Length: 92
Image 1 (cartoon, rainbow, N blue to C red):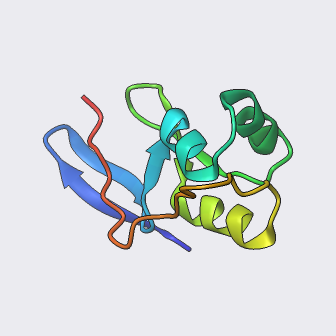
Image 2 (image 1 turned 135 degrees about the horizontal axis):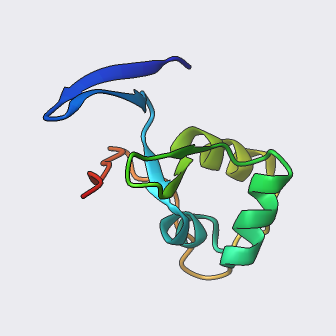
């Protein structure tokens, strides 16, 4: 997947076409701890980007791949999945 280029008030910003979420949001979607998310990043299973605010975001496509591959156990009960419309919050 190639990143899309969007124009913003400060210039052009490269953003992945599929969207991204913060570490805490990835924890909720995957049903795992922050530590497990960092392990998955280090293992290369979750792909990340750095924002202009220097925060790290997880690509939604990589979360879907991890869920499909069964790399993490599904939480019991009310399991969460990716939303159908990948809304991405702007960095402030």
